[in-house]
Length: 174
View 1: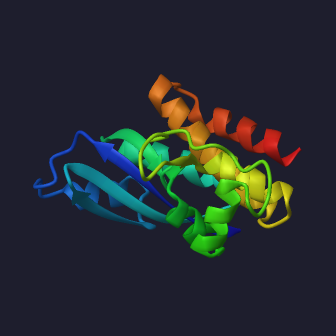
View 2: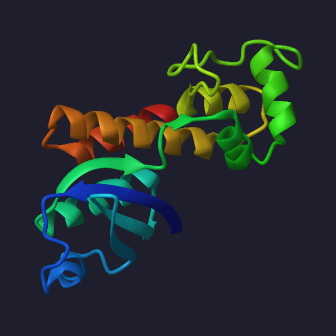
């Protein structure tokens, strides 16, 4: 088993209720820290599981069992050059050179804030690029893809997130 760290962002419960944290603990979130920040319920997990898809899908089920509405899973799939550097362990200067095409070709284009001073990249696309150059292990790509798929499933209201995430992870392991 491996420990996976991620956050489930939720809403729909009163954080001032006497049983606020207890609801999460009793629903199976005993491996998480529950807080309320900036109008959102943040459930920070350090979940032991056989796979990332199992960890995230069971966490979503537990948060829902506490009575909360799951809004999304983080880490955020949109990243800046600084966040790419932090997540990959590569210097900010090297990431800038990759993004500009001066150090290597084919780095993904930004997907948000394209005309802004601080564009954002899709984390899964960036990881795919690093994995193709053997600069990150395949597991990092699987985790990024599963987080993307979890958020897509949440947004679409898919009732069978567990199966959808398992299919995603299996597809990327093949």
